[in-house]
Length: 92
Image 1 (cartoon, one colour):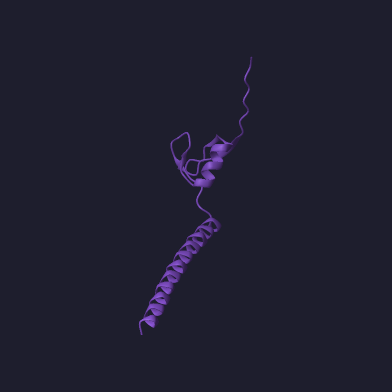
Image 2 (cartoon, rainbow, N blue to C red):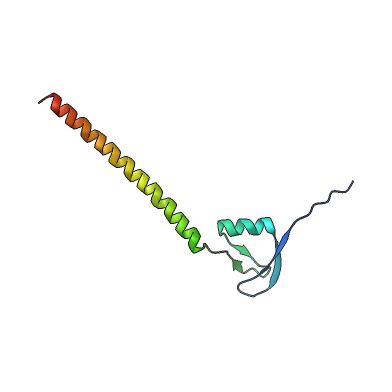
């Protein structure tokens, strides 16, 4: 019985020494997405930097989360103030 496994590879040039080498496609896809370093056969670090579009998207996500938190905080403060006013009206 023979077990055959086919893997896809991509060619990469080191950004430091320009050596041509091959890396499995699934590994390279992960490096493109997580922007972590990988090394050429000579030991030089290589990385796919975060693009401006990715930076903008991350900033938008962060800003949206901050605005939601601020909105919830303001809502809670308004509800507390409303409760204070109701209580004050009852006792005056």
